[in-house]
Length: 401
Image 1 (tube, rainbow, N blue to C red):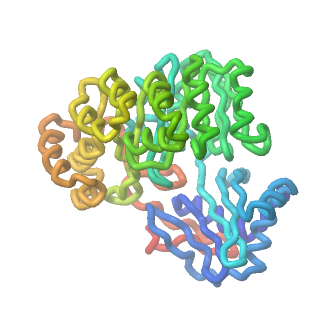
Image 2 (cartoon, rainbow, N blue to C red):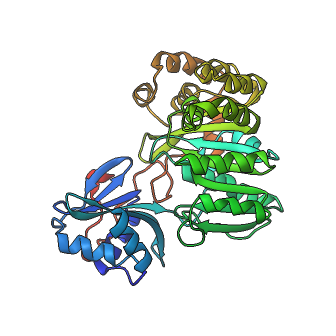
């Protein structure tokens, strides 16, 4: 990558300083940031021209990435800017023009406690082998949760952690563990080439997003051969995630895959980000632990029945999203309206709320330190104050807080 365009660098600094999570650049609209889940245009910034967007995109691409953009009409990559931050980017074409979407990736990996992650996350990262899935919609914080889990292993276990990502997002440094991070296209040709991981003596493998048949097959193969594998899927809950894995295989192989998955699966964490009272966003979690009853459902292809087992599996660390939404309401972190709108079963949220209050979950949540966070990793209930405007753009204004 050559030196980033000065206008882009100023926009990225304004994005980070204002606590936004994303920056969008497209022809015919001012630079736009996503703050607390809402898109807000920068103030006092003119509409972007084709020449400006092209210049900013090309300033980020080396020859290989530029060739990939020309061939595929889109390209994923990541990069860091000293004293500003690290970013995941996607450059793509729309209506004949280039556009750019950038996600802020904080340099500091937040802890599981800061994220308010359930205790089951610690249970799962201590499993000796198998596959652990973190699922949720786009922008729900899956990468952040996985980074916190990998960082906890890195802190506490003398193991070899290998990541295969497209692109590499959070940077992990050697601590108690040894960490090698391979980026698809730069360090490894494709996820299919990730099969070589078996020859690299890993104990823990992070595969990032399982996008296709090849990446899913590799994840299952690694989990079956004694590795602890972490991966993500864009689905709303555990049942959808398991259906997605099984349905991607040809019909004649599904019985076999169900047996493989039942044997390898350790758990599924499903999450979504919710607007917090006072600003920022907090994560709500569903947790499914693969006990014998769950494994039987996977083998028999009865994933739709899993929710009943999750709702009655609290003793093993399981919880539905409704149980966690009720906890967040009881703790004063989200409003009841937010909880009801975020659930497919709003009446269950009401029923769980009485239980959450009776069991003093609110006290335990507040004492753990969970709070709303911005996309750039800052914390606290109050909105982040607007920074001094860097030239040429002005950061997201008060209407973005």
